[in-house]
Length: 251
Ligand code: MN
Image (tube, rainbow, N blue to C red; front, side):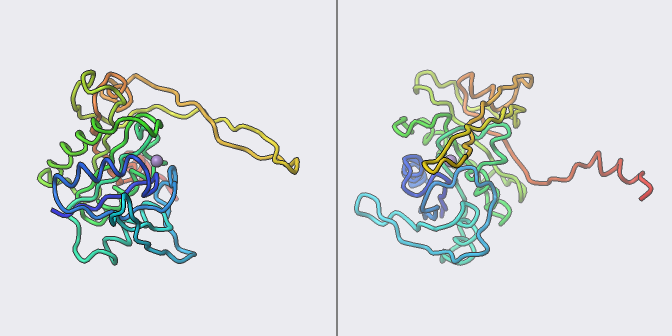
């Protein structure tokens, strides 16, 4: 099995190293990942500047290719051009910070997996619910292994990926894996209004995540209860009910 690993936190992140180690238990791992932090870039593509693939070393060994682009760029470039063989799986992560509810829209981690499944390759994204860079990733890495080892045989339809969110709990407090749906939690936006040294105003996104807990099988809620949440996401964006409604409109 050939596994393409990518992420949005950058090729030097703690999470991608943990993911690579766990995916090596499944097969040959190829890493093609952004050369810098690319969180919350969504499905952006680079179309107005050159992309470069630079060999990247970790602990003295070749780790993968660092790309001066987005997570979706990495998957597109790797699968179409860089790799000698088409990967059997695309696995993105392990992201620092949860990608539950609306976060899945903004997430570069999820978008890398979306790109994989749009290219017809079974794909998944993995996130852990903490931004702590020193967090022990072994539980999330084990969950990633468990889900990835089943991913190929699930025969998910093209355009559908698995979005996996793992709680930042100790192994003994972990309750197991549950199948979930995307929750309805949202961000209450706010921006810090600051002054630069020249006295000019600038803004910095801060914001509070508002947990909406009305769905019993929502990813947020289930993760907060100590489970890993596995949500199948797809990118058929058409609202079919409204499509029917619009058919009755006299244009
Ligand atoms: Mn990230």
